[in-house]
Length: 144
Image (cartoon, rainbow, N blue to C red):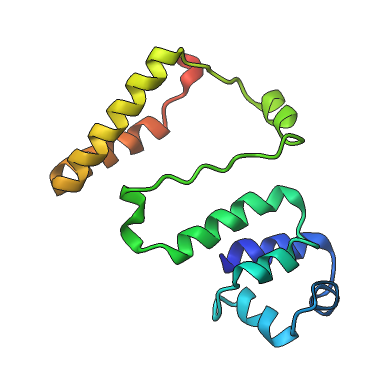
């Protein structure tokens, strides 16, 4: 979270002192948040939202959630960064989007649930799924 927050606040162009004044925070507290020594509470995130550019909020909130969850949460929870409506047109311009039919989407969700259950029961299955995942990340979908 500290990395994401630091990156977002640096992009504002405000000094740390100016951020503290605008958000009614103590400079020492902000420093601890940015160095990862202290985790901001929800009310602090609401204050920081006054200066954080909207395009950074999703990453910051996701990082905040991940930092507060147990380490093995990835096996049970998937966090999806849902963009603001103003960002959607830009995304659509930058990439092709595939819309699966309703049945395929349901079948995929069932498959992912099954794979999650299997991975939770067996380290070998988990390693196999991760290997497949790493291979698929390098696949160029435009060539398929």
